[in-house]
Length: 261
Image 1 (tube, rainbow, N blue to C red):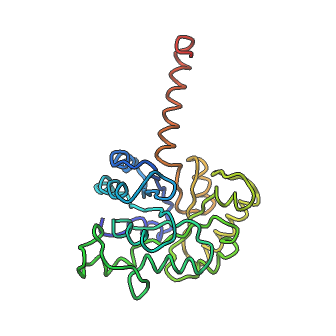
Image 2 (image 1 turned 90 degrees about the horizontal axis):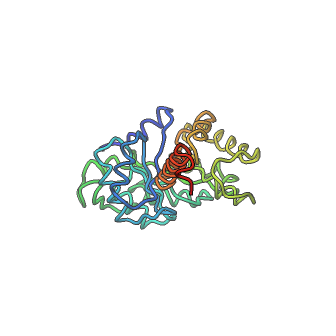
């Protein structure tokens, strides 16, 4: 993939559905990549992923029309630069709470003069050469801070005004914890929905995009209707477990007493 197709869709205002990889396995990633997602994110924060499994997942997905993203474990330059060199077209970064932290994230993602990313795109482009990748990377890479605390919500205008920020990604579980609520995904509390609307209004003013993690497809559809343009549905391990559980339950139910435990 020579350009960021997800970014093009988002800039056109289209809703994008994002897959999420917690399982550190190329075959699992290859299977997910065939399911119709617009993008697929390797989760290095809470997933069972490391750098080498990320590369394997990217290699497995290469022939499919999905944009590879990464959620990095934290906002620090080493891992941000490395996942971009490894082929990520966007970085989702947890716990960005202030404009200073957003500026730091942007600087890690972009080459000079806009940032301070080190040159060496070992998979993203030819190592150490002035290739088209270096000439276009600053325009193609998505820089996506996660908004998941009350502090970040309070600072949203200043965060969004940082040059280079592409959009935001809501972490509902951590946001809930920050508000003294249970850590769940598909939230219906009026105070949380009001926060979502505040964030969406701030995004709309700047013609950026907002993403959110969802537990179910139906809730993801509701969030698209609300104004979110990047919606994730669960993750690979969760979807597999759900499908397996339902298959077992259906078999036992349809077989009747013979299959009862």
